[in-house]
Length: 173
Ligand code: SF4
Ligand code: SF4
Image 1 (tube, rainbow, N blue to C red):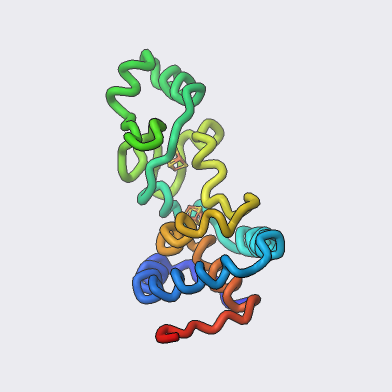
Image 2 (image 1 turned 60 degrees about the vertical axis):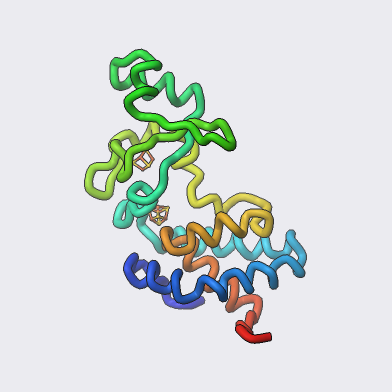
């Protein structure tokens, strides 16, 4: 395994430098067995999440706007002693394409330093981020690439996946 990278500045710079490589790697993955990739990614997910402390990072809460379900809206509004309509007006936006509602503030209004102040009650979208424990990795590679420069877990999984699959980038082939 490669040494774990957690420096957010380096990860962001590498995501720009390696953007084309990552798209070529995405095409490479499409030719492989999905189930084999899922097994490797899920093992890497476990190994890498054990070595990264999200409480020392919090970058997703600075960079992304999580989806909230109707039940979560009810819960969050009640935690703030608001009716749902007021809570939505103040805190949510709607994704016009998917119709989903999401917390609009960046960084997230529930973030204090690097810690989530509603950790036990955070939206399920936050709970499951960066989604690398799920099946169907090769169907989600566009989203994986967009999270590569944000989340150290995704970055380290991708780089180790390239290594394990003996991926050699060939920019001009
Ligand atoms: S609710 Fe908590 S975990 Fe989710 S984005 Fe906000 S601060 Fe982060
Ligand atoms: S999920 Fe990724 S971006 Fe979010 S806190 Fe953990 S390592 Fe950082």
